[in-house]
Image (cartoon, rainbow, N blue to C red):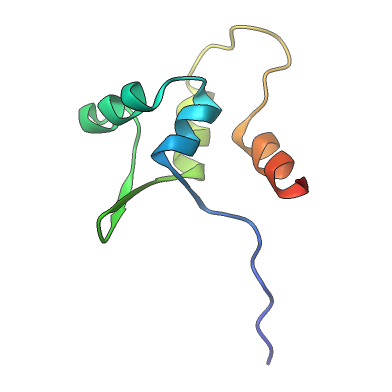
Length: 80
């Protein structure tokens, strides 16, 4: 049985999540400290699960029609 490479990322760094949310790095870390952006801790790293970011965005009101979701952004980043 051979292992199939898994190319889809399951987490983002806080900086990557900030870019996807359209906020600055400092604000993202502040939101992490307040518990507004869910994270998991692995060693010294804080990672944002993409599924949690998707759920966070689903609860937000869209500011304009046609906004990209995390799934769309994940596909875009994989295409590069």
